[in-house]
Image (cartoon, rainbow, N blue to C red):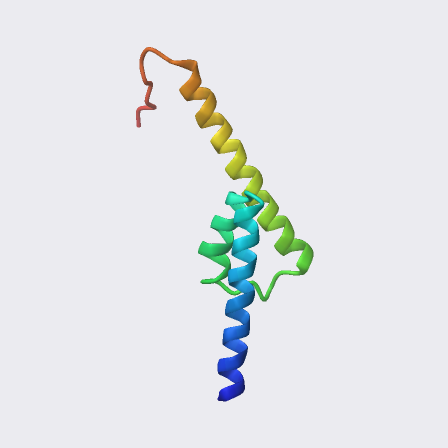
Length: 85
């Protein structure tokens, strides 16, 4: 039991350090994915390459979405258009 608690604390410190580094490096997409999905979901079925690819894709998507939002905002459209259902 004691070793289990120690293992949990060590894993928690590693996760905190990973999140701190992602934030300092401004990898906000990876940070959000890691915080939301990696901690709550087990990634046991993924290889290291698949896991890294998954994080990098989330960072790419995050940056692309931020860029699109910034471009739309800077376009100063007169009217906002919405897609009808």
